[in-house]
Length: 502
Image (cartoon, rainbow, N blue to C red):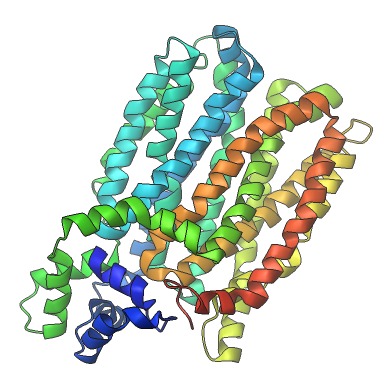
């Protein structure tokens, strides 16, 4: 399959059509002329064959997505649980706050490194066994965290845990693209993916705080819990169906007694292995996309700031709600639940975006990936507004409910924009969705990891008001990126070797 995608990259071709690089067209054009291009056949099968994941029943598709989103809740809880027990870890392994925070930032860096090879690997051999293997390894590496006898050992294993757990972030989005493609209703399952990510991050802090103060448990139990749940999820994944269309169709063709030459071409092409090409694809595809696709670069840096903001918020919560407003540490941890409320409102709001997306398709007679941002063109302004709101009501002179509500509004607008970005990537890079999402997440998580340490310094040297106000001023400039992508996205896609042009 890697050679097929490599040819597609050279040609820039994916259904419906793509930009081309003239000197590299001849071979693929010859195959198209003879009607033997597997990607073309897959597109044809997609419209008619019930074996194609996009044609599965809604019950089956939603069942698969629900399980994988629960997996994401479980994995994303780890980083925020760690934040809540940092003081207990610092007591056990005396060190500076910045050094202890390395456990969290190295976990996030691990989630940036993992997709480099896990994303492309799932685009080749299928999603299922990448899930099973990585989550099993995730559980095993948590043993190292739980039994750590010094801080360097804990930090190293946190990094390895992040690498293995990254499959829940990079591959779930690819799975949703497998099942729904660019259908009008694809926004809602992707919204569940975004919701589960935010739920995990929000629930992790109060759960971690409760575990940390529980005398019969202690901070090591956040990792013991990961071992138990990781093993359970790895077992469940063994019984999940494969969703990568190329693999599913190849298996279906082999099971049938058919003489359809097109179908036989697909099966033969997908079972043909070029070891060097496969290894090259797995090791380089995500990085090539990250460095050569302006769309991915734009979105990755924006999401890095937005995702890092969540961790800065976590760093600042105790300063705002404990120091300024006099809440207990458990009470301050519960304030993270405002993100759950906000992202739930986002999930309920998604049908509005779906309706506008459908209207836009009817109006233009075609599906435009940029239409995924129709609501974000308005709601993106809530990003800086809520940061200013939070900043200037966090000093304790107003009710603590004001910054809590502001955080809830942020929990609505930030995930809604993330949802638009994921859907846009799925529409634009449908044939290499896992690799594209991986390339998108790499800069996102690297920036977020850096912001964890920036947050520590900011809240040690600045008041909570001006720390959050600084973020608000920065976010004003980032609002422009959404408009740039909406109005100039078609031009960027035309110049891409991999992006689909509608």
